[in-house]
Image (tube, rainbow, N blue to C red):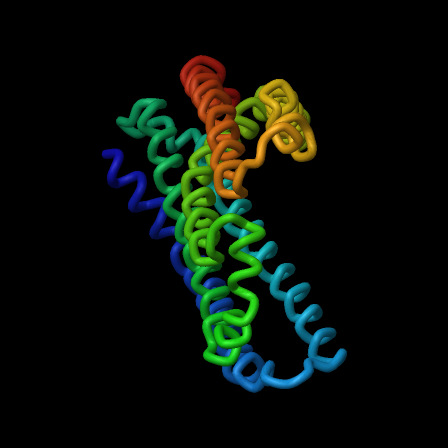
Length: 267
């Protein structure tokens, strides 16, 4: 039954998801062909080229943000509508337990989030892998590698891996906020939004405190007392962040599981 829940969720969101992400990839291909491939970095780069590149970065950032927000809203909306709105009366009559409902949403939500992340990274690769761009980057690759402590390719792989792993925590946190928000019948959406911001704030404060205590905060004891490569510093920060994420994600899952079993409040 769990597989059927996941399949139903993915099938109901696939058309719009694929359409918008297909448009995103098409835009990236068009920009690559019509603009990026025409850039000449062999001579002195003029101000107009720099300004156009900055404008492109800004516009692509907005597009990527909009695409990610759409995916997140799609996941959140389906969780709320299927389990806590009038449609929930039908969902809860199915021969499916609360944990199965929850895991069905977690798995389908993660698949959509992971697919969104991979497609966004694919679009970025389309933009920056032209021969003229890679040739220009090769001239400064050593300096950037020296500053980061690892190559830009390694940085991209690590960033993608981090996004894919943290997507689990993001999905569960979204469901946690919606589950807590529905406990306030008159202000469900406002309650969920408030819980989201409060939870995010608490997690950020906790992470900063742990970084200060551990001496990993940028410019703090870790930097001033040790001659540590960027990769080592980056790895330690990621380890600390993943530790916090693991603890909070487990706690949010347990709370969501309890609410769905004991505190369901349908419209």
